[in-house]
Length: 138
Image 1: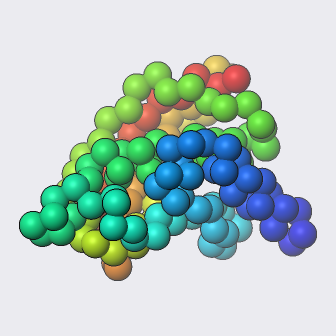
Image 2: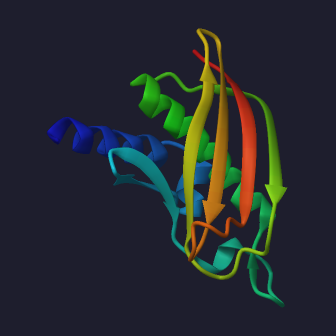
């Protein structure tokens, strides 16, 4: 169990080294032995002040950073995977609430990995966005 705690601590240490992730306030937490990513609500992440809703770029950046960190965790590597392509589907407005994300590696080869990401707020069965990305592994 201590290895798992150390691993999640290293994910948060890596997040501290990514300026955009630090600006957003992204955190990695452990859920059932897997990383889950957490974005606490902060006012500067609002894009539409009338709803209010979290900015789509914040959601996209959150999911991209989550996927990169998930791959680093899965590979037990300090090498940062590089994005080849990234596609996001916005499913509903993200309210002025905390945001959660989970990633799934669909396929991983020696050089390329395909990752699915899901973001939700109060109810995991009602995602606010899903994304797919390919990464070049280092």
